[in-house]
Length: 635
Image 1 (cartoon, rainbow, N blue to C red):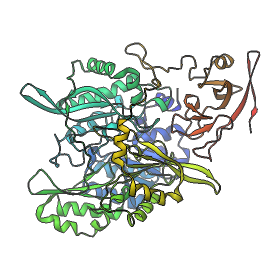
Image 2: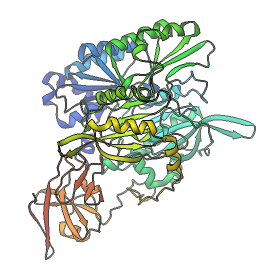
Image 3: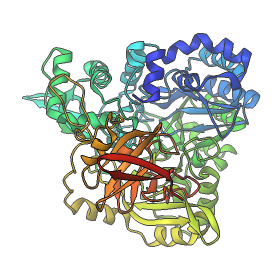
Image 4: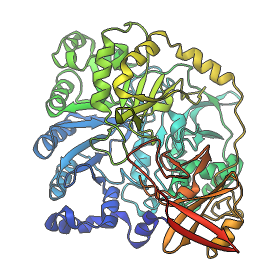
């Protein structure tokens, strides 16, 4: 059992609410490791890189906010933080730099304007994303924003939904223009039409098992289910509870919904879903989505006569407190006070009358947050990066913005592109679905250990999704500008996608988890080499297959033991980055790949090629006369 599962067994994350006065009184230093994790159920995040200062993630269903909320966020950021907030790729706001004693006061202010931070982290249903111009755009089949809110109301504060095996990402969208990266979500409801004789029914097709982290982009599978809007929230809730009851929990790196979908298959999942709902489900309808995608940046007419929305580019999603206040003023002066956030980390001001749109476009703020930005800024997305994230390996936001501004001066102005940065393999910057996606790492060069990236191209979500292809490895960040200039100038990314789609997919090596008896949780396929420490280490090693790993405990040490080329190799089992069991990783060449975030460790030395400042302890093993001896640590 992982330590997070142990923490959840001891106490529900929401129960930490009652401990907040004590945390505030005693100080952050006295908050236990378990309670630091449980605080994430409340949307409060301890950050090792900023000890004593916390991050708070504010839930905004479907990204629909209003001016009063922006005014409150600006005041909180200015009074308790550093005077800025970040828009996330899940249409949320992240507040930074406050102290734990400020949390009750911040919550009071957020609650007063209808905002909450509950369940925005850890093993919960995260913010439900949707089309940011739902109800406004003429290019939608239906407005799904009310369903996103209805579903959110079901699970917020409800302990039936607070003990999932891992996080659960959901999009519910009626937009035809693929603006929410549906195929990357654990659950996606996408617009569809079902013809029943002369009756035309509008609703959703159901996609399941998408993800970006925990081993990379898995394209969501079609469940072959059509659901009408009135039943959509109930169906989404039922799928979450199936994941709660049957999802794998032994290894967190293999606990996402995708692994249950792989283990069961969609036929079994649909059957179990029908049993839980107590009714037969309709087969999938016709996908109503268009071939293209849209970011909704620019000025567009709404379907309401005489009204428009203005989509404003927010470079890398960072807004100052003053910009928040000015957006609130503009929303009141030109619209109806509503403000919306996009999955591309941008902002939309809706419901602007024709007679006012001209005046809005010359407002000073729109020279900073442009509605007609250059392509390199328009398509720029960045994760938080090393400044505030425990997982990130490199700084992203400032570097991404600086590089984009340099490229802006030399690149063509009429070539659309998307350019996404992820600071580590967890993929929070959505690098797998961009024209060009960068993944941060640390590499050893002649000058020493430096920040670097792997470069991916051609990834896509939407009705014709495809995986990105890695084009370059270990590119030092200080050498990126000329590399990217040539790539952006001459790259034909749509052609790359067509080529990738024409290549037959390789059959999977087998699911990471296999299905047990009907109704039972999936189990590890490594029956010969169970992930838990063996009672008989020597026997476990003797049974070890070529190219596989197993976990053994010897002389008080928990080891990951691998067989490659007939030789045995032993490393500490806990990855030095985040503690994920290395024994569950895949061997590639002379390295084992951590199943958590993709870090690579040399089997013989424990050196990490992905981040050279990390190293796993390496041991020498000797198997003699049926006994396993652990020699001194190898150098």
